[in-house]
Image (tube, rainbow, N blue to C red):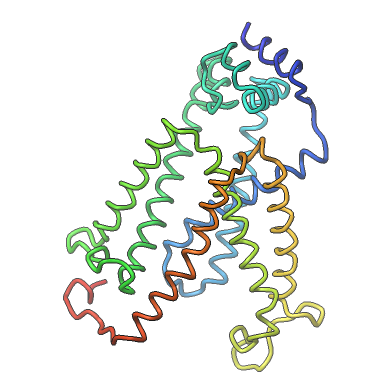
Length: 318
């Protein structure tokens, strides 16, 4: 009964069913952000011997796995749950949460996978759908902890955080303090997500990542013209070119266009990414300004005092 009621409720609330080119374009930001989430795992690799080659190979493997996983799950969901129901469930919970809550108490955040577990009749499909979310969450959490731990370690090693954060345990050869801080922060955020509505935070994070992507793209676009010596080919006085145009500028220009489209779609599709408010925008502005402020403070501290390298055994092993 709930299955048909959700579809009927979505129709009465103006939800449009089916597929369209506009909907395919609107999903671009989600896939861009999802792909950038995969890239976070690269950060923990440190200073790679051949970063360019490793980055390309890792990106190719990531894209291939994402396509396989997404297409496989999508085919399984269409078979067991149905396209119209997935569209009805997602859009009804976003546009009229009260109407959705009157039909079922199954959390809207469970999404299609949650309903797939309920609607599946055979145990194999139930198992596949049931382990999909936990496995994905474990992978995301591991990447989060690894990346945040490395960032904290690097900041402490550069004296921008207490030096104790960069201490490496002699037995495990890992920064225990930084790992503990990352795990504690993740637990705190999970608790907040359980009891608070973080839709605005999601919107802010999506826009924040998109702005970072835009900044990096613009930097790649102008770098060959402003500081070509930083990206010159070894043994030459020139940069890599595509049809006479610096390769970095070509890819930077293409990424700039994509990033601008992503930002526009995030801002104009609040039903997908969350709504912006005065408080959320102010918070985002403060976060963006925090970077330059921290940089200026650190620059002033470093220029005003000589920072001697640590000579302890732990630092040397690090």
